[in-house]
Structures are given as structure tokens and as C-alpha cells.
Image 1 (cartoon, rainbow, N blue to C red):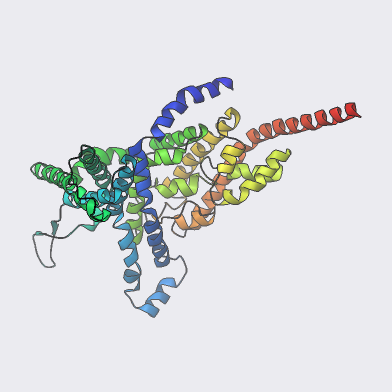
Image 2 (tube, rainbow, N blue to C red):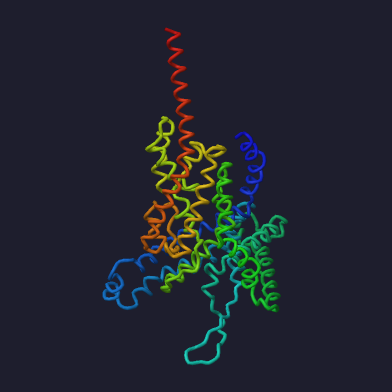
Length: 449
């Protein structure tokens, strides 16, 4: 046990701490979080459009007309289809904050640079025509959504690095002291903004002379496809979950650190499923999405600790574990498990680290097999909040299919079985400690008497 602690403290924790403090990963994580409220709101309308109630579609059509579904899904397009645009602003804003430069200007410049990197000309074939024609001046909504997410991330970081470099070199226009701060900041951003726009413009002109034609195509081929294969594979997902649990075992927020890299991949996969679900596809393209992990794997929080909380609540013998179970059950039902990870503790506890790492890995395999064989519906692209209680979360994430709720229940039972023997060992240790303290106190009192 002491050797495991030594490895965690001396080898894993220093490296993990440096990764957790890396400003670009933090900016990616925090910037993408900015998109989540919009996506969740859009998901609510998506749920309303496809409620699994017999006769619901006919009732809505007779009440609101045949175009009711198209109109109901307007907010879905207005939220999901600007995901990359919001991310371009949010990531640049958060990264500029890390450098202590004007974040608002950095975010605005990043959005302009992202739009500059996006081709406005689209090809389409008019009805009755035999050849496609090029239409200029139309912003392609697909590239403003999940398909443009990787470009938005890279442009946000590149533009902010250029922006802060020029600011820090003091190559700016300074206004007199009497000028209002808002006006002064806008003039300070002029020269950095010119350099950012100029560099992205030159990159676009260069790329247009190649077979790639646009920066989006380059990023999609060089970065998007390999990362998509990694994030969309069983091996890659098991590795990601293992890293999340290992980082949490050291007291670091593993989901935030790993999510900074893998989050955009799973977010894009979620949106692909959402589009297919809206179109009525029976077979959704992706298994591994954000909801795969948040809803079906991390039941009770990272480590899937709800099963452990239930064991504490009903089978604990030590007072410490009983009290901790009562304290942790309410947040655990909403997938918040800090009372367990730090209160039990699981962090730096070699005994409890074993099931803490093992349980999510086993449920990843179970969930993958269930979804890949068609026994359970795949995530429908509905952004169910990670705090959604079990059973309800599985039902909604699967697009209103009862199989999603059943799978959550199965995973919970499996996780409970994995945690239980380790919990009993820990509970016996705590009970022995409590009885030893009681016996020692009683003996001291007898001697005093």
C-alpha cells in the first residue's frame, strides 16, 4: 500500500498537477462550458419535438398544423448551430484572462478571425438544375456548429496568443488619461486585431491555393479524424476514463483535465447523433458521446460512486461510514461525489482506488456492448445535464427509450458489486478504530475512578 502511495505522490501527482495548471487546457475547458447552457436549452426543445408518447405527433399536428415540428425546432438550430462560434469567443476570453489582458477584445477578435477562416461560398443545386452553382455570402451553419469546433478552438488560441504578444510588447495605440476606459481599450486592441486578422487572412489565401481549399478541411483531416477515431473507439474511451480516475485518485479534477482534450470530440459526436435523431434515423452514428460518460458511466459522479454511497447507507457498521452515507446520498443522486472522494477518502487511499478505477472501466465495456449490439438505444444527442438523477437521465439520453433507464440500473448493480467487498474491508477498519477508541476511553475512566 505504501508503495502505491509513493508512486501516486512522487510520480503521478507532480505531472498531473502541471497538466491541470496548463492555461490552454484550462481555457479550452472553461470556454466550452460557455456553450453548455445553450445546448441544454436547445435539448429541451428537442425532447419536446420527439416525446415518445403514442399519438403525440398526430395531436400536435392537428393542434398546431403540419409544420409544428419545424417551428418547434427553431431554438435547436439557434443553439446547437452556433456552438463553434460561442466556443471561439469563450476560449479566447478565458485564455486572455490567464494572460491578464483585455478578455472582451480578445474574444471579439477571435470570433472575427474564426469567421474569416470560414469559407462563405457554398455549392448547391437549384431545383430543376443539372449542375451545382456557387452562392457567395452565406455563412454555412454546419461550420458554425460542431463541425467547426476544432477550427474554433485553434483559431481562439492562436488569435489570443498573437493578441497578448503584441499587447505585452506594448505595440499599441495609447490614448490620453482623460479618455473613458472602454474607448481606450478599443484603441489598444486596434493593432493586435489588425495583426490577427492579417495573419488569418494570409493563412486562408495560402490554403486556398492547395487541394485542401479551406482551413476547416485541413484541421478535419489532420486533427479531427485521428482524434475522432481515438475518442470514438473503445480503447481510446477506456484510456480516457482510466486517466480521469487516476487523476481523481491524486486529488485532481480528472474530468476537467481530460475533458479539455476529449470534450470537443464527444461534443461533436453528440451533435452528429442529434442531427441523425432529428432526421428520424433508426441507427445513430456514434456510441461514445458526452452523455455516454456523464449519464451511463459516471452514475453518482466520477468513479460511479452512487453504489458505494448506497452500501454506506444500508450496510455500514461504523458510525463514520453511516454518517458519511447520509451526508453523501443527496448530492450523489445528482452525480456530485466530492463528499465521498475527499470525505471517505478515496483520494490517496490505495484500497478504495482499486474499485474507483475498475468500476467505470467495467461499465464502459458493458455499455459499449449493449449499445453496439442494439440491445440499448444509443445516446440521441440530447444534452441531458450531468446532474440528472439516474433512471431519468438514462431514459432521456436514449431519446425516450426505456432501454437507457434499464442500462443505468444494470450498471449501478455492477458497480455496487465491485465496490461492496472493498467497502466492507474499509468499514471493518473504521469500526475497529472506533471500538478501540471506545475501549481506550472506558479503560482510562476506570483507572481514574
